[in-house]
Image (tube, rainbow, N blue to C red; front, side, top):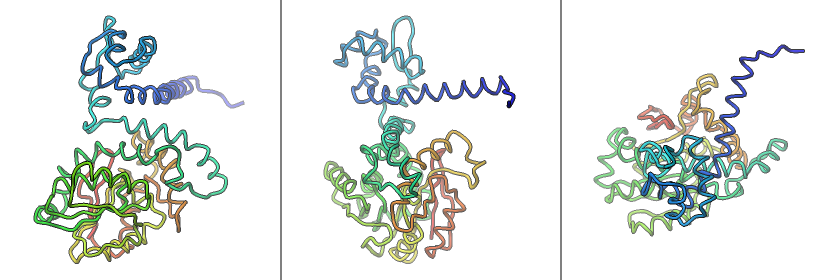
Length: 349
């Protein structure tokens, strides 16, 4: 019988218990967001549980238990019978435009659990699970997950890091956002650069419908959205083409790179935003890698395998592998223009 190291075992059990605490918090956090409990607590706290229940229009007994769980998780502050959100807790749970708002991550985790039967079956067959066939509103959750990063960095940091791009955008450029999803990135750029024209392409009709509705709600006239695949969308002569957190999801990213190169003007720029990753597994054994490998197993790899070619780069492909794909399309210069803890921003010309 293999001898058990009690210290190592206890450390592992402690780590797993912590993980389970996070896992069972997923529905509680989503309830708190959906019912406005975090938002209300930020506005009225410190309060007693019954006072929060009254302010939020919820049943007191449920709110008491929810608050106890949140306090035990460290998501809500409790002192002398009163509950509140610290500024840091509010930044994560109650401020939609915060760069570290993580509600979308909880939505994505819930969709991943719902997606388990389909992905589990694919483990046996080797086939993919198409983006539009994944459980619940996976695309809604992913859009919400990435929104804080785009809101706080895209116009402020990422575009200015590209050589001469913001000057062109201010004057008036033609831009394609390929794999635009719900169009959050496209809309942010269109708002910031009214003299430029933007088109968002995505292969998922439901996402294009949502993106078009968002654009209409914002009253923007310098952008539109079309259903189109990365390897054969219809536009030409673009000054800038962007791909936000989607190249690794494509079935044939090399064909996409080739088509994007042809769709750019001479001197045009391709901006590729991808999850932050090292080039080896060892470099990615960290909290960010853990999240991305898990999401990649449940979302990214199945999505790619459901498409033609099915290269399945995965969300932790790393810069060297991504550069290889980008160069296959005819690009000769690639550099990391910017980075965040969650993303790398590559410029290809």
